[in-house]
Length: 448
Image 1: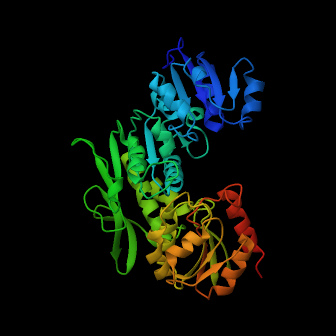
Image 2 (image 1 turned 135 degrees about the vertical axis):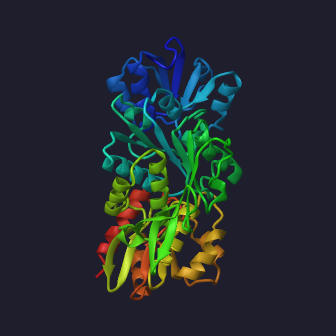
Image 3 (image 1 turned 30 degrees about the horizontal axis):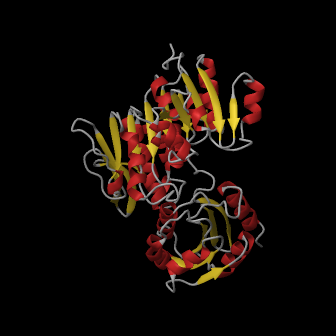
């Protein structure tokens, strides 16, 4: 049975991947709808016209009168809710919603919901791998990979969902079995009025959650929840009741739950303190979702990390090269600099810069001074980063990524690591962060 009234008219605003998943979902349920997009030629326009020629589609500037014909607008996460046409429609009584709200209403299996400024893709993938290793029929997606609505199936036993703040803005009641905000640091400040607004958007993930997972070392990850909601924690310190953390015995570090060691940190393929935190977060989420420890630990031992996320590229003359192109904000770069910096014998040569999205880079100054031999800067906001670092570390300015890799290789000593962790978006110079990472790996491969 449909969970939405089929006699009401809906408009999908935004025809990207999630918009097209909404088209399929509504069409399959016989719901009357149209599509609008601010772009003249949105990515999925040809597919829509080929597969659903009967659907009305309007491209270009949003028409408020057209939007007000709908009872509900399903807004793409790529479009800010502050867009004047959307605000005017909302003021006239049109409900603003999104694909995750529909997914939550329709999903029959428990949902593990994961958000955070950083590491959510790694943790989401890990929990999915853990569920597979435990023999569960699991679906993984949302902000990562497959759009949420395309995952819906009566066969699924567990959904593991990565959710962005943009997706959560249009989600009223997720009702997850277990929800977490892994961490909160400044991101998308070009879209939010400040950190409090961004924090509020993230915390919508906890609405209706039956259990929560909290980062003990990030106060902003802790939700305001009722007394009866079970709370599990993770952190890089010693765990206590209901906690996952690190314990040390005979000079060896272990991933641990409460007072028991689970496995040596040395058995992880992923490097750095930030990846140890990711492993602990995944264990906490999986445990809350009822997964046994043995298959979860098996999945951890075999996980080699995601591409462009502190991914080892090569070693040359005693120097390791890491691609962390996905570090498009300060928090992500901070995690990589501190995590990898503490995990190697030498120093880091950091490659940073790009489109800073209005962020404050000051949190990077101290860890860069501690862990970096030098910083190679490029891109639109290179000078903002330079002003932040001042004379705390040698700074080298370059025009291209290839030049950055060449200069970094010249500066690095044996035992050091060259780390691409830009703390910035890539769109000032590249198609996306994937292209930036790919070109970095290519330039590293060309070194001799």
